[in-house]
Amino acid sequence: KAFTINTVIESYDAYVVYAGLGRNYLFINAFNGTDYGYVSVYRLERSGASLVGMIYDTSLQAAGFTAECAGIPLLTQPENIILGSKIELLGTLTGVKNYSISASGMPESQDEYYRVYANTTLTAKASFATAGIDPATGRGLNTAVKVEPGTRLYYLRSDGRSFVDMMTEQGVCCRMYVSGKGAAQTVNGMPVADCFDGVIYT
Image (cartoon, rainbow, N blue to C red; front, top):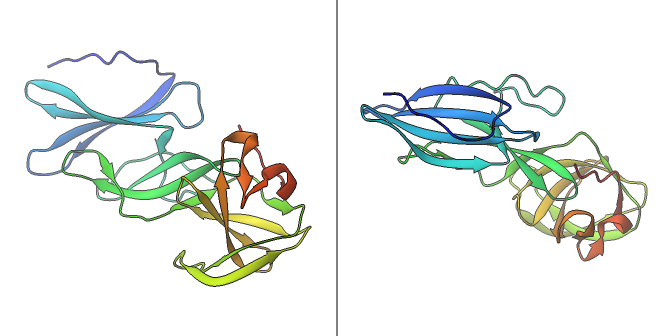
C-alpha cells in the first residue's frame, strides 16, 4: 500500500530493516539544510506504514566513523546501528553511540557516554583545576587536574548534557562541567572565552 511523507527533505537515504518476528521498519536518514538532519522510523505492515518516532539533530554514521573520515552512512546490521548526534558543549560537536533496535522499533543505545569528535582542539587560556577521570571507564579518580595556560586539549567523550571529558597533550584525562548555551556557556563556573581558545559553534 502506498503512503506519503509530508516533510522538508533536501536529501535522504532509506533502508528497509527486517528486525525478525514480522517486525519490519523503514528507516529514513534525512537532511533538511543542517549538518545533522534527522532519523525517522516507520513500521511497515500489510495495511501500510505508520510513524514510530523521529530523532532530531542525528544521522546514521558509517561503521568506521572518525572526525577525519565520516564515511558513507550505511545500515547493514540492525543490531549495531551507529548514530551521530549534535552536541552543543564547548562548541558544536558530533557525539557517536552504537544502537540496536528496541521492541518499539526505535534505536536504543546501551552506551553510557557519547564518543566525541570535533574538527578542532582547544588551548587553555587560564590556569584552572578540574576533576581527573579514568580515560577507559569515564569514572572519577578523586583527584584534581591542574590545567595550565597553553595546554592543548582533545575531545574524548560526553554525556551530551552537562560535561565533556578531554585529554591533555600530556595524556591526562579531565572533565569539563559545562552549563549555559552557546557562547554564554561556562566551564567549571568560568566563562568559556576566559578558559579556552578554539571553541567553535556552528
